[in-house]
Image (cartoon, rainbow, N blue to C red; front, top):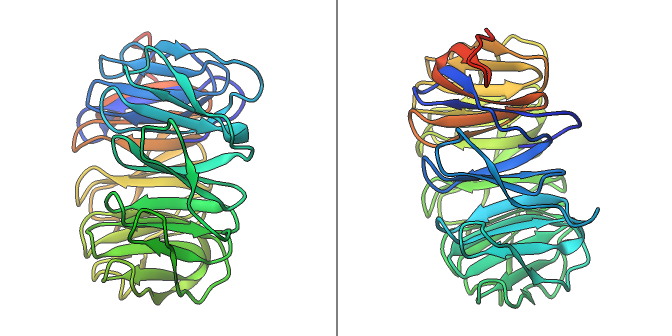
Length: 354
């Protein structure tokens, strides 16, 4: 989820996207959201701190307020209903252990903006910064230790499969792996020097990495080896979505590709619409959504065809699909929710928008 100037919208669906209802959130500049259950969720904002809902997004309340220009949050992750972390500008990290009632600074020694976080268990977290450093805490953020003796170039993504086994990727095409909680890191070969933008696993063995350029990288042995697979299109791929081990979608700003054979062959299933694609997600194997420049697209046939389901005056930024029937999205004019898969969208006054 990204935020621009102006108010923001949050929408919710409870019927796999048949309809969306606009939620009366009452705050502007929504940045990212994270749900720990169908009812409990959090949103980080620019200007209003962290918001929390306990009723599935119907009402939202501040759990903290901004404390100066440096308290701009860009990452949020919860390990359970009560324990969560936020990270942001100039290395700031805050932690809550009571579901956002109170947030406390857990580390003040970071000096660079923090980019990505992975929390494999309650008290263990890994954080990467824009300078390429990776840090680990084993005590819930009381202390952090730097995990690398050398630096990546801007840590784009950290992904841990379990407490001690994880990966990090940077701007220079480098993917590294640890098996001992970051004490030692091994470089995994790729044939690119471009940004590695996303790194995700569908099982403990099978995963994909996306990057700038024509190739996608696949592993079937938990990252020990990475096969470079040409997609046939030179793009800046930014998002990976798994339906299962065989069906995977990758997204760039202008293109959507799909594989039905675990990445061996990629099919162009780009919607015939203008604008920039921001995010992709599926509520089940068949029904999926793409959001971007003022549009929400839907497919009901595994991405074979797409149609515009909803248009808005602002740019839709991010989706969070909770399960087959519940999802939220934001865009840069307000917030909302759907209840019948986009057939109807309502504002906070229950007025029909589309």
